[in-house]
Image (cartoon, rainbow, N blue to C red; front, side, top):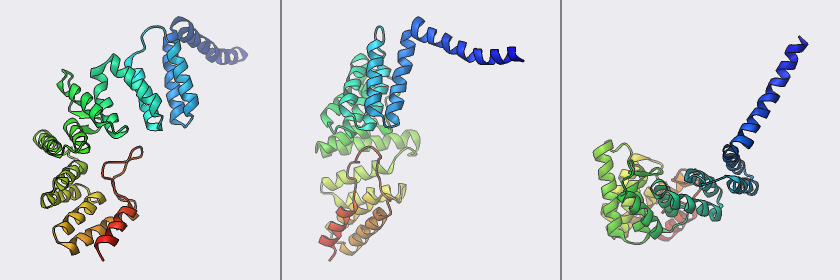
Length: 277
């Protein structure tokens, strides 16, 4: 009995010693790779400075070339935590080492997090022109839609509209429109609005609302477009509906970034006070 108890106690100790020898002595790169993952997990739990120190220390101890996917992974968690200096430094290294693997994420991050639209377009265009397979989507966005957002924010509205049309057309042709999001219709509507085509914009605000009734931004901008066209009563009704939804927390939003043309309660109330008296 005592012999079996000894075996049960010694087995995990010996296993731990063997693992330490394998990881730290025989294959230290494996150990430090796992340690960098541990650093990212520390960041996920909120220990950002400690996590970054662990990651930096791990990278400094790895013998030879650090794989681009490790830089990429470290960039992702730093981006989510708002550590943008560290995030972009790691991502630049990843993309420099492997442009074809990193261009999509780099373009998407530059678009949403850094709002650097020209650099975002550089990476998205390079990805689209590459021979990489499965380049249709960057993160959750159709690449043509992401490029359209860049052009819209650069005030190239005509080009943005063309790209939104191409993205929607591609989804309708290949996926029966299942992957078209309410944001795709909403952003096409906003672009038509910005081109002073409010009657056409309303059509796509309605399509966005049909996709998701919680699209308060579509209700808000539809109301403004209706008021612009002289349908003040209908427009004000939609502004008030948008306000009622936003008060309940029903609107498009993201945990990490402010969305393009995201609407807020104070903004809607100001428009109601100004236009609906």
